Length: 281
Image (cartoon, rainbow, N blue to C red; front, side, top):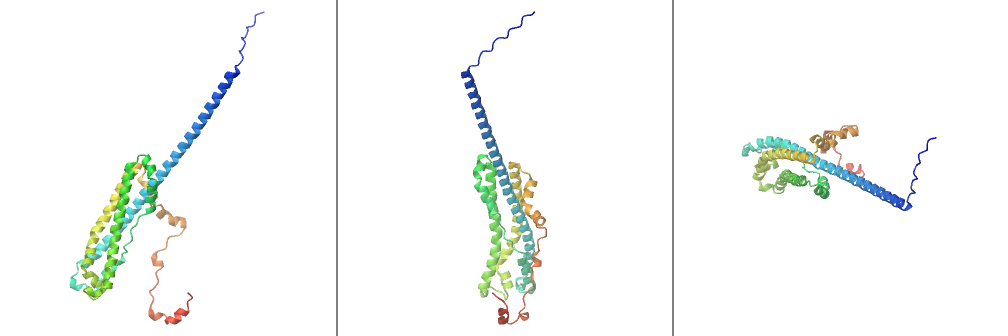
């Protein structure tokens, strides 16, 4: 019979060593867990911050695009007014009292001098997040956007200033009609050297506004490159409301001519006391 191989005895485990090993495993496990949790939280916070910066950048560039679009529309209307102004400035001074020139002036003023404004809430959102941008080292973007906002304010002032100058000229002549040559308000306006200078400026302002729109879009494309955002994404963001409002509401927006009513005629109205008693105020 063959002898069985003797298996050596396993030395007993040292309880003290086992305790320290277990404690080490617990400490390592806890440390790794904390690092993973902290690291995950940090990563999620960074991702959230990145998404917020992306959204803010979209808001800023979308705002610039919308303003450029408004400037372009203003320029197109200014070219129309410039044509009317050219007819008026080319007329002989002694014929400005003729009704046809009053009609041309009415046509010029009927092309609405739309108030030009940009969304200042977007500027505030960007300003409030400056520290976030600085931490990322996007100084070129910060500086570029700051300059663009200043330019937008300048073009607002220029465009809206012309609108105010025209109204001021009309009001001044209405208050002091005898101080201006001519029989009618239209003729007095068209003879007034100050008002004629305003008419002469329509052409250069039309050019400046068209150039400004193109310049803002050029700088915006530079910002898109800096922030790695596509032009398609900016355009979609900028004009999303314009494209989607009717689809969301389910019906087209009404035109202003749907609200136009005939002017009142004194001959068609009852006497004042009768009309007043018929209405409750």
